[in-house]
Figure 1 (cartoon, rainbow, N blue to C red):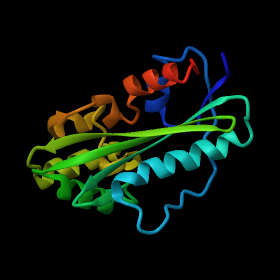
Figure 2: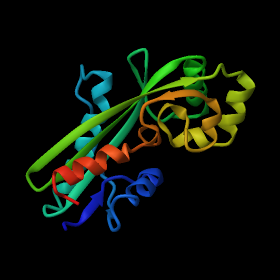
Figure 3: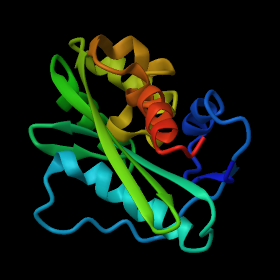
Figure 4: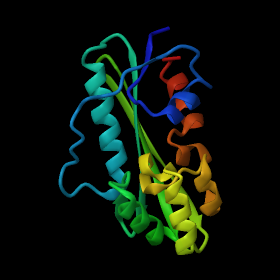
Amino acid sequence: MKKVILASASPRRKELLKDIVSEFEIIPSNAQEIVPPNTKACDVPLVLALIKARDVAKNHKNCVVIGSDTVVIVDDMVLNKPKDKDDAYRMLRLLSSRKHQVVTGCAIVCGEKEYSFSVTTEVEFFTLSDKEIYDYIATNDPMDKAGAYGIQSQGKTLVKAIYGDYYNVVGLPIGLLKRELERLQLI
């Protein structure tokens, strides 16, 4: 079996990958994450996942490199990680009482071969009061998460419903990733 590398520093992705790969190394990408102009919002995470995986794979030719990126999309607008608490408030206010999409792109690079896919999950939020938003921001939980919330942590209280892959919202569609790695005979 080839060595597996996760091209991400995300503790959530690390924990999920442990469920399908017993041993792997974490080497975060240092590549500039520049998305070409006119890229559709739903394609942004796939473009970024490929950038990350390719960057790490160029120095690890005989390894299986997995790159991933997750974004929240509402009104065809990408919500990445908030810049500050005001930005987190803006995002959470925008998501209040609404449905949005969480899209995770995954890229697998092994030598000259590349495979990529994305998964979309729809999430619906409760109506959020200002107090609820400010209390959640005060936990600091939203500051390192796309869309300013983490469904696996305190942000779960904001979520009214989820339609699709829960683990995709956490940051890695682990069930599909496992099947693709097996199909490609990489694990």
